[in-house]
Amino acid sequence: MEIGYLCIVFLVIIAVLWLKKPLILAIGCGIIATVVLFRVPVPDALLVFGRQTVASDTIDVLLSFYSITFLQKMLEKRSRLREAQRSFDCLLRRRRLNAALSSGILGLLPSAAVMTICADMVDKTCGDYLSNKQKMAVACYYRHIPEMFLPTFSPVLLALTLSGVNAGLYVVSMIPMVLAACAVAYLFFLRKIPADMPALDREVHKKQELVSLLKNLWSLIVVVLIIILFNLSVWVAALIIIVANYFIDHFKLGEIPGLLKEAAEPILLGSMYLIMLFKGIITYTGVVALLPDFFGQFPIPITLSFGLIFFFGSIISGSQAIIALCLPMAIASIPEGGIALLVMLMCVAWAAMQISPTHVCSFVAARFYKTTLGDLVVRLLPVVLLFCVIAYGYGLLLTLL
Image (cartoon, rainbow, N blue to C red; front, side):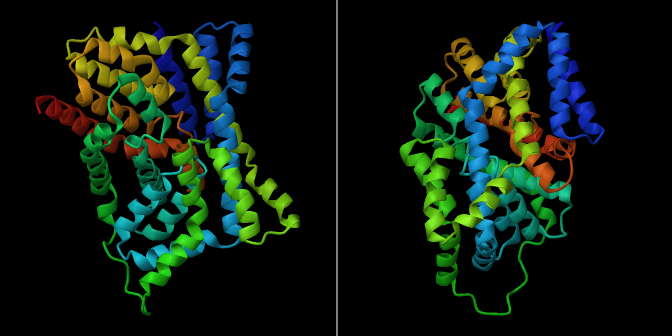
C-alpha cells in the first residue's frame, strides 16, 4: 500500500509540472500529498519540517547556492564569464567538445548555482543547432558527470566509506563508465550540431587566451581547489574567494548592496528549501526501506533487484539517502560483489538523479531556458535508461574479470 501511495505522490508532482506550473508549487503539492496519504500527524510533520529546516544539509545547500550566486554576480559585473567563454571558444574550436567539456569542468564545483553558468556556455556554444530543451539536457547532464566518480562529492565519499573500497580503484574502474556517459549523450544530442566552429578571422594566440581564461576563471578554480584540499563546505570556500575578489577586481563598497540583492533569488531558494523538506518527509515515512522487499518479490537476479532499488530510490529521495540506507544491505546480500557491485549501483544512482524531482540543478537549468522539469525528464529518460543498461552490463563484466 505504501508503495502505491508513493506512486501517487510522484504522479501529483508530475501532474503539476505537466500543467506548466513552477517546481516550487509541484514540490509543495507533493509534500501535502505525502502528509495526507501516509497519514502523518500534523504535529509530527511540523517536527520533521523543523528538524529538516535546521539540518546541516539544508543550511549548507542554501548557503552554498547563495554564496556561489553572489560570486557569479561579481564575475558578471566585471564581464569575467563572457571573457572566459570567448577565450574558451578561441582555444577549443570544436563545438561538440566545447559544449561537453565546459560544463564538465564547471561541474567540479558542487553547487547548483554553477548550473546557470553551464547553461549559458552551452547556449552560446550550441546556438540554434539545438532547441532550448535539448540544450537544457546537454548542460544539466554533462555538468554532473564529475559527480559520478570523484571522491570530492559527498555521495561518492559516503559510498567509499560504507563499502571500504579504495578510492583510487573506484576512480579507475569508473573511467569506462564516464566515457560511456559522454558517448550516450553525444548520440542523442551533440552529434546533431556541427563538429567545428567557423574559422576565426584573426590569428589566435593560444598562450594569451589560456592566460585570459585562467585570469577570468581563477575564482571558480580556486574555490574547487579549496574544497578538495581543505575539505571545506562550498559556501565557506566561496566566501573566502568573494573577499579576495572584492579587492582583486577593485569593487567599491557601494556595489555590494546591489549584489546582495541580486544574489537572493527567492523562487530558487524557496524551491531548494521545499525540496529538502520533501526529502525529509519522504524519509520519515520509511517507504524507501520497503523497496528491497518490494523488488524482492519479482523473479529477477538479486543484483538487478538492487539496481532497481537504487534507481527508484534515488529518484524518490536522492542518491545520498539511498546510498546510506541500502548500500550496506546490498554489500551484505552480495558479499562477493566488490568493486563491480559498487560501480554498477553508483552509476545507476547517478543516472537516476538526472531525472529526479529532488535534483535542484534540474530546476535551475529549466528556469534558465524558460522551460520545465518535465521537458528535461522527457529528453534525458532514454539517455538515462541506456546508460543504466550499459552500467549493468559493465558490472557483470567486472565480475568476470
